Image (cartoon, rainbow, N blue to C red; front, side, top):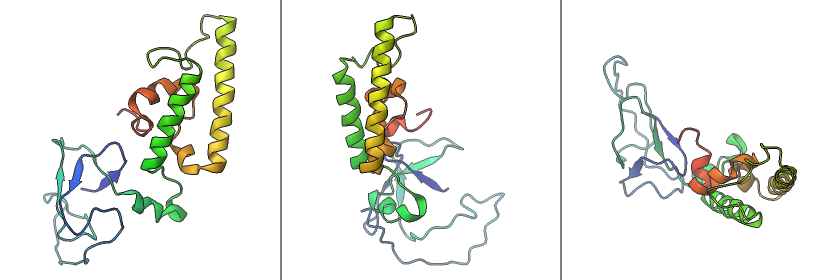
Length: 177
């Protein structure tokens, strides 16, 4: 099975000594001339540059479930020209700090507020929400210019900041997680 990478949603751990440090280094690639039948052989059509590397799931994986692993920051740092900006671990950490600081500034508890007010027509709450949205958009624009990785990790909608604060920006970035 192919794997995807996300820093929060990891179900595979690397058990080899030759790979897994995020350096992008790989063991020798070998072709074995295997011809597997796609109808009967798990892994038929799969390819890997990591021969003799063993991975183990960290929890039970159900049939048909997608497999996630952490490729390491080095994988994404070395591919920014081809795949674009992908938030790294430090970017998510900084995004978590920024969301918490922003919500603290508005005295928003993690259980309430955070962009959901103003529905009852309260002019004070509507003004507060407007101020929050304006300031959050300024923060996003600054991050986009000065730290694209953090910008990519930050929630774009002020109404979702409460959830991002409670689960973390990395997990918040995954729908249905």
